[in-house]
Image (cartoon, rainbow, N blue to C red; front, side, top):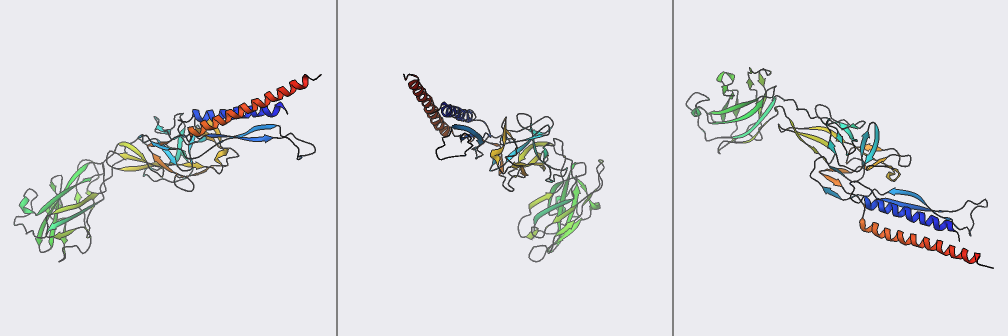
Length: 406
């Protein structure tokens, strides 16, 4: 019997307790992955090679392997918190150096970069000015805080029912005389500078199944008071095909003039039935300038900006990295890992593609440490330590017996 085996056993038990203690200490660390101490037996080298009577000389710590099992996901309500449900790691840039993490506690810095608590920048795929994302080499994600430019109306659509029981007005059309038309409605349109204009539409029946459509903008009649178009219905009260009119509004406010757009009456949703006048849909594609009011992160990693004018625009997409052997990653501290020759090169892609998991915004992944399991493992490690100490004690007694022989 030798002291060496027992000493190595004591060291191994101590290292095992260290790993267990580290796991317990990080039980509340976001994105932490528990480490498992892995041991290997040790044999002395022999010129004659191994034999059936060879006795090992103890044990050694072979590795502390991180266990990349899924941690519980808890909601936080913070829209910049992101959890990964499934495989993959966030790709973080630190002055050009790349590390990887499961910690999704992010925020915006003063320059609009998405950063973690240590200032590392989350990387992903940027979007151009039109919100189009082109996957390529991931770069630090910088969100634009600027307003979006206005867009003038180019297309509008109106779905409605005109009352077939209406009779032709006797008075000539006049926007100030409600008896000179049968029905009216209004919608908002926008010029090139984002200024809104109220387009009023007036419907006047001219006979069986026939209607004239008049228009005014901001209270001023269009087309010199003449109709901008007509609607002709069949005997079933429907249009044979879509009808498109082209109102033209003269502007004097510095915006591009005239403001001309296509006003469509869809055949599928424009009717003349024996029911009261009613508008069922009213839409147009223009908008005024918008200020950024917030962000939303989708399960596919797309970061979408929300604006005060009701518009949304994609600002980028978070990239995830995966490894053939994630247990081979090197722990850097601060919830970060670095690739190594054992882990292999990162496989970078979008969330929900390949082997990458999906993202959940407003949530964080908790540590995957199971306190109950760790406490049981601690008791076992303590017993192993005590047993190795008993081995040393027994060896000491044997040596004392040999020393006392006369």
